[in-house]
Image (cartoon, rainbow over the protein chains, first blue to last red):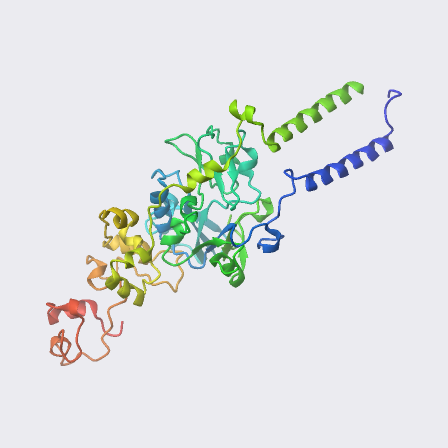
Length: 268
Length: 191
């Protein structure tokens, strides 16, 4: 031990102070950790949002009790947004969850559910099982308020707009795929034809004109709703009031903005 | 230990530098060199794309009669574009729309599939009036099942004697030309 070394007590004191300082800096320095949090828990609290009726802050809600797995949403999305009809290119897709009486959970999504589930290769298997419950879970980009995809982009090509939508600047994306790996929901994919990352953007070209996203427009049973979460009369706020809601993977801290009614433990 | 202090300081400088680069908006000359700065223009570019899907209200502008039938029936909440495709090109330039009329297309929503809510109207397409197009009995806009026969059929083989189009208990106008022998294909007793 050299004579200039600190004692163990001194080291521990300095480490503790450094840790405390780091936490304070992280929480309060703008741009690092202090964001206007959407809410504690999963429900938006309008008072925490710096937007008002003239400045929408968009949200989305899905009611899995209503979804019939017809796939019209996935079809409309591909048509509206020019998404290639490849099997690995989906901005939105539907998953079917089957829970058996023995406690097993099965998931299938034949071609993203775009043609419905009537021809799913797993139907034969499911017919022989003792099914407790089964339902559909449509999925899309959650436009997280703490988006991991934005955080990891090495060139800053993806960003969040003032109205709460995460967009990709195709001119700057280099197609490295880091954001695709970072998204815990599998919402992003590499666009085969143009070599950049792509994902659902809640039909930004439609919502900017006051139209709903294409998937919301065509859903025959009203399982998808869209609106501004700063507007207490919007369909999203209404669903959040009327239903028990949750988000996907809440423990990851991504603060998703797609609220689900009718989720079950076992839905990932 | 002093060599570790220097290395530690170097690490702190690198981390702080990286964090600063990510947080601080780059000055203009760096943007000119290709260092990316997020601007509103990209969001504006995305917002400017044309929409392909319209809204049933746009269809109503010209197709009021069909719209009224649909509004009164079970498909009131089903967008026209589900079966007729994106409408904006049709509204703007008169492009043709398609009509999905096959059993498979109706079955996309109405076939019996594991996972559908039990309260949703669905049938086993293999068992249900196989071969014929669904719209033979089910108007796609009114979207109702053909009414079941509420009375005993004994001694009543000629349906048209009461149910001719314009008769005592008239059949709807679109039933014109159908013979009595065809009625029970769709109208079942107590179904």
